[in-house]
Image (cartoon, rainbow, N blue to C red; front, side):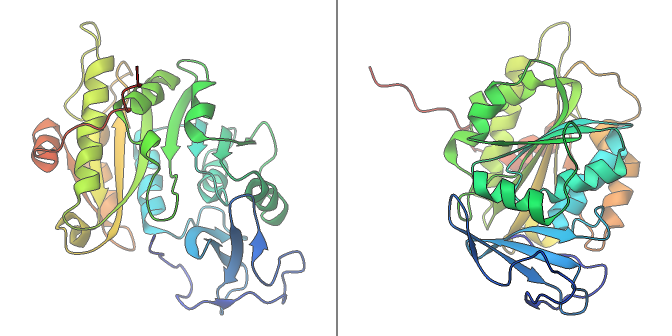
Length: 306
């Protein structure tokens, strides 16, 4: 479950219609379950989107840059430090499109695609939250991996994976083969951001690090080798020390981009992460990633039966 940071109040309550004439006051059926909007008691323009009872997105109707959840604040900090100008972004697991709203506001001129398995949820998000229109934000219903496969090689700057079925990411979005396809879609130097929810002893995160490292090795070539800082892990210290359940952001950069500054290893990014409402710590570099992954084995697609 994602934890929220708040720029106003931490209290919340059932949705009322006060000041929100177009929003429902209870659960609404979607293609894969139910969605319910819970608004802040002190600011009825701030809404937590609950999917099947689990917090999925935070929407500030007045400030799209307020993404609410700690892991999204981390992703925003990485984007701010490592990218410039308008971006082409693909969101796998769009839900309420909180991150897409933020990118659109922070980076005018960006073009984005939001992909979600729940077609009805996308329709509702479009009607409830005044989302950017096409071509600024196109919404596609379908399986994240299948939709990713339809995208052209070297066509986007950022891929965000934030897909959950219950409290875990579907297995077919965790494998080396999937990450290789993400790297195919990214332009040289492009950024892959992952929301990994895990609990002690962080077995899932360790396997994901091993998997992404293996995929980066596969796509590296003699002419464009991997760099030391092409993979980073970011989370708050208590989660990193395996003391409790939490969200971990993994960030990877595709090889071949221009090298301006230190990338994911930059001192500026580390400072920005420490300055968040809930300070976060970054691990970056081949040695640190190797130590964190430990003996974890890369995840691969199941072998096809003969």
